[in-house]
Amino acid sequence: MMRYALGIEYDGSGFSGWQRQDHAPSVQQSVERAVSTVADHAITVTAAGRTDTGVHAYCQVAHFDSTAERSGRQWTLGINSNLPDAVRVLWVRAVDDDFHARFGAYSRSYRYRIMNRWVRPAIGADYFAWCREPLDETRMHRAAQVLLGKHDFSAFRSAGCSAQHAIREVTSIGVARDADIVDIDISANAFLYHMVRNIAGSLIAVGRGEESIEWFAEVFAGKDRKLAGVKAEAQGLYFMNVRYDAKYGLPETAEAFPFSCGEQ
Image (cartoon, rainbow, N blue to C red):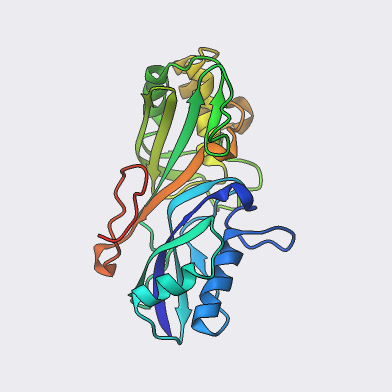
């Protein structure tokens, strides 16, 4: 058996999320079917993080084990020829047996994109959340800084979260505007169920002027999900990249948006 890591880009609009489902199409199911075809035996693919229905990825990272020996180029071309158009493998690398896409990740990064104008978008509606009211991105950015560091994120943890505890370390978070687009970028060692969308929902409330910067800090400190804002829409969320120990020699996954994960 050899272990391989792969970087995956996908449009989540037509999928019920990453995780394999019995009743609906999933990204994992599509990737496993394609890899199994190239390997000529059944393959299970393990991802760095699960994404929900409608959530996109610029560089999801996963691993699989196979007895088949192929070059990275052969794996990539073969897998992509068996994938639906909404999913593409960007690279494949042979890695040490101790590599684990989920448990070996140092950090993960997400971006939440908001179309901020009074008319709902016709083009790109599946790729942005939409907010009619003007957003003050400066207030949102200031409010978000309280999240930096290692804290209990229970205030932004949805019911059904299977994590053993809510302690997470946010290493960077920022809110910025480019014309009508407001982006929330966040990196952490790991994330709780719906954590980014719950944070985004509360920051949007601050940006609209409905809530204060102090309110956001109080909600966070209170550790009560019921006091926070509503969960933001799924289609604005992007899994940007994952970082691992340099010893594995995986392609650099730069923070630049878009197309952040490719051959170097």
